[in-house]
Image 1 (cartoon, rainbow over the protein chains, first blue to last red):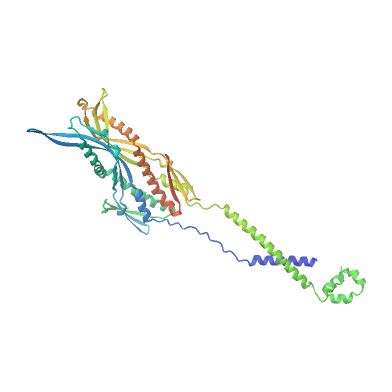
Image 2 (image 1 turned 180 degrees about the vertical axis):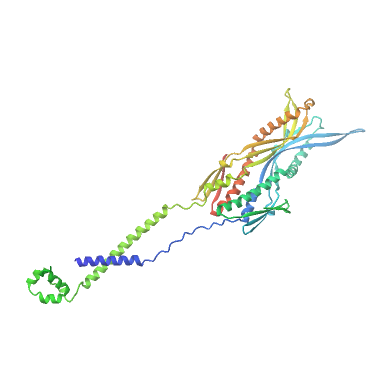
Length: 213
Length: 243
């Protein structure tokens, strides 16, 4: 009986060792890490420029001094219709993305950045009321036609004024430039790269001007 | 010291044939107290049946131990895997740094308005038009950022926009006098003060100034954050404080 017990234990140990030793070794599973691509993407930079648009609330006073010829019998004279109109609207400044050009060569990114321009403007029609008119006491009488003409002229007037506002155009161009610079700086700090930007400034029509780094 | 009993016990195991010949008497059997076993005839050591039986039992025991052991190891590995935190790809501190260093938190509006100046009689003396700029901004330091790594979402709560500066251009003042007596050398100072008050009051009441500034701030934050989180598969959600 003892022999059977001893032999049984020996056989069990032998088989257990055999099962453990003969098992297929599992190859260590390599961690599949998502490879994150962090290099300047042209599509991403164009999206940034689209987001760099600047909506500007524009409240303005249109001044009108319209000479009106009057006559009575043989007597001719000129009166002035002198009045102001207060109105407001929203002007959108931004860079025309279709004129933006980006080239990535190694660690250098060359950006041709057009000047910002008025991308659109809209007069707030609710801002044009009777109270919007301020009439000089010495002015000729203001008629309904005068008011209607003033309302119609408000939109192109706003666009012309905004287009001539160099401070806002410069600010909008600078805004787009800064956001693109921040994008490159963030890539550099995230992945430890050393991308640099070379700037080529163009006018709002895309004609190239000065270069800067 | 080897006794007779010990000698015959060894003899039986070592050479059962010889032992059978020698141990013919009961006397010898009693001495060694090991009964004669016909199965041991001609055998040295263990019998085949014993061996087979031992191997079969040993195999079953080994299989049983192997299965139990494998399950335990598998459960332990699974438990370890659950406890290991998944690496965080997008961190709040990184996003805070990206947003806070930005100098694009202020937005300019143009407020060219008309101020009405009344005299001591309560009637309007003159109207004065002026050119002014109004700066509205958002404190980017107060943007609240949360990252949900399970849903792969970054949420930003934007604070309110406030008017930070009103600047009237004194050279732009123009007048329509209703009271000629008000047209004097001191009119500029009074008019300028009236224009500043008018610009501050009117701009504070213009919701469009705040709305455009909020929209501009949202665009800036998107332009800063989305390029950083999108490569990791995260999406951005922006909530304004007012909503």
